[in-house]
Image (tube, rainbow, N blue to C red; front, side, top):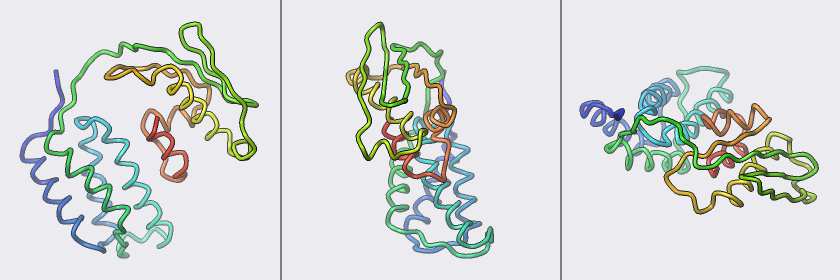
Length: 192
């Protein structure tokens, strides 16, 4: 039971990725079309959503700078080129299994005056340092979850982990790397 892209679609996307990785400028509209095409592949490509958000953030920023004018050209900088490399190396093997969700671990995390995580009756916690105390609660909730994974799931491989978090923004960033406005949150969610 798998989801796989048809060979013709893989080839077409590979050609588009090659084209975009060799140019330095394109219209925001053309870039948005590529982003949409890549989005249609995410169900068949494990971690596709993670690497989609990098492109979406670039498109969003370009539109913001240009007052939502899709006809304006945007720069394809070196950072974007790295995103193309990931897609080019994974699109040919885009295949994802359909399976039921059976978590190997369930981790509860919370962020108040510090971070606190629980897993299988064990607890780990710590306090925020001066710099961390200045961070937004959404970031701290993600950081608490990250610490929970480091404490209890560092050696877990190829398994599902159920994360219990009481912050909807943190949940969204983890589940779909949902957010293009805050690079700091996206970066931490990608690590998670």
